[in-house]
Length: 157
Ligand code: SF4
Ligand code: SF4
Image (tube, protein in one colour):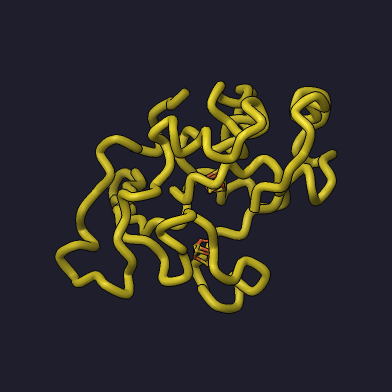
């Protein structure tokens, strides 16, 4: 996910999402792993809620995917983001750089591209490190638990 791009080159300020290179696009991901949580959608309102149950491929300790290159074939409902499918951004948390930039906002102050440190997303409390359980260890009850602190419609950072 996040690659080590220089924070001196603030490309996210001078380029649109569509203009970014593949590395720049990947560099926007802060590594929070919120999008790797199972989600539920209210059929009537369309509102999306996040659970604290993680995809089977997520490493709960690092918040990284264990098979990022093959994620789409391994997990059918993995959110593989692209500029061609902006509707998928609606499933992202308000803290997510892709959603923020698409909506005309900047990066939050704790973003690794701002701080120069991958740990800053975890120190900020936004990431799911230490908060999630794996779907491999979950039952029907735990999948219904929701993340009250990370409602996707709220603005974080
Ligand atoms: S929610 Fe956004 S920033 Fe966080 S892991 Fe997913 S794509 Fe990356
Ligand atoms: S396949 Fe990987 S990137 Fe996709 S939701 Fe699962 S852990 Fe996240």
